[in-house]
Length: 66
Image (cartoon, rainbow, N blue to C red; front, side):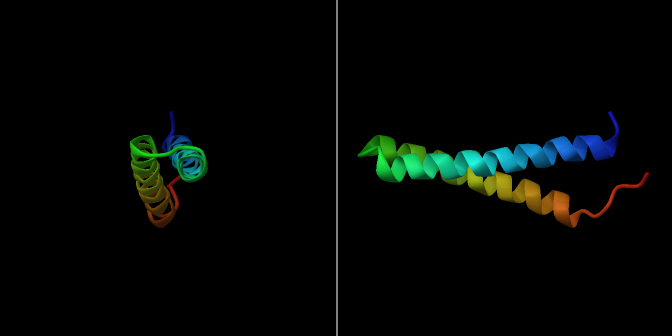
C-alpha cells in the first residue's frame, strides 16, 4: 500500500471519529441522563480530540512525494 493511500485512509478514520463524536455528544445531551450521559460524553470528547489530532497531522504534514 502506498503512503498517499495510507494517509487517505487515516484521514477517513479521523473524519469518522469526528462524526461519531458529534453523534455521541448529541445522544449524551438529549437522550441520556446521569452517569451514563457523563460516560458517553467523555468517550465523545476523546473521539473528538483524537480525530482532531489525526486531521491536524494529515493536513499540516504536507504533500506526499510521488
